[in-house]
Length: 141
Image (cartoon, rainbow, N blue to C red; front, side, top):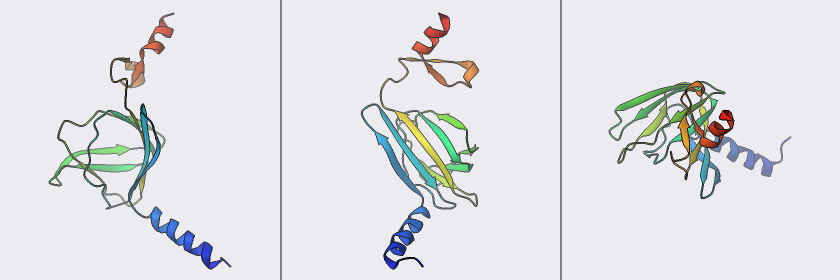
């Protein structure tokens, strides 16, 4: 038998898990990391990304990116356990993300606040992912 007081907390946590949401994991002056849960047919509100970001997929699926007038801008099909790189959004570009699947999608997003492209170079053999210059220098030694 579950104590009624504990049941209240359990009911609240279950309700919270059934809502599309963004949970901040870490933020400081150099980096921001958050976890986003997108439930089917519960889109995220309009937003934009000023910086490029890496996305690690916990639970995959197909994500539709919708513009301000709900027109389709892009579709991403992401697999659990894989990471993806997304460029910063164009200026004045707002979008909402919608999961049209039947299962929730969960991703962890990592966004660098500083450093920009001054200290990175393209590395083709890593799928186009940027790599710090110090790694390139070590490889040349």
